[in-house]
Image (cartoon, rainbow, N blue to C red):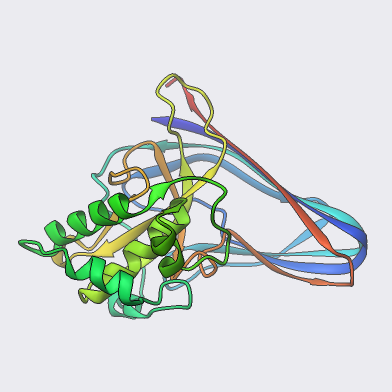
Length: 268
C-alpha cells in the first residue's frame, strides 16, 4: 500500500518566547514492512541541527528556533510504501538489549488491577501469551476518546475502563512486564478507512519481544497486529519517551497546541 501522510503541529504562545529547541522523532522506521518514497520535515523559522540514529533504531533530528516568536509550525509531508508483515518488526536494526524494556515507568507501573488482569491470562508460548494479553486489554478498556489525558496512567485507564490507543498500549506494556516479556510503546500513523477517507489522528500501539521472532506489534485498541495500514515512527518506554516531538521553550509565554494529521491511500 502507498500512503500519503500530512502532519502539521502548530505551537502558539500568548506572548513571544525567546527561543525553543526541539527533538523530532518524525522519520519512518527502516524495516521490511515499509519503505520511504519521499519525506520532508520542516520547522517554520527553524534551523536544523544534529541528526542521528539512536540505539533503538529511531532517527532523531534536532531543530532550533530563535525568537522572539509567537508561533512555530512543524510540518511533515511524504509518501511511504507499506506491506503486511503480520506485526513482526523484521530487518529493523537496533543495538538496545530487549531486556532494557522490562523497565516500568510512572505511566506503565502496575497496580493491583493490572496484576489481576495479567494473572488471568495464560498462553502456550510467548507469542500466544502476547496475543491473549492484547485481547484481554482490549476487552478491559473500551475505546472512547476524550475521557483520558496525556498523563493518565495504565492503572487509571484500567480502573476507568475506557481510554484511547495510548492507554491500551500502556496497559498492555504493564501486563507484558508482569509476565516477564519485554514491551515498549510505539508511535506512528494509521490509515483506517477502507473507503479511502483520510484518518485524522496519529496512532500508537505496543511491541512485545517474543523470543526468536523478536519484536511483534500489538494494537489492543483495534484488536489486531499492525499491517500495511500502519506507519511506524519510533519507540520508547511509554508515550512521553516515544513522543514524536519533544522540546524546551525559553520564555514566559503560555503555549497552546494544534495538531492536524491526514493519512491517505494513493494509487500505485
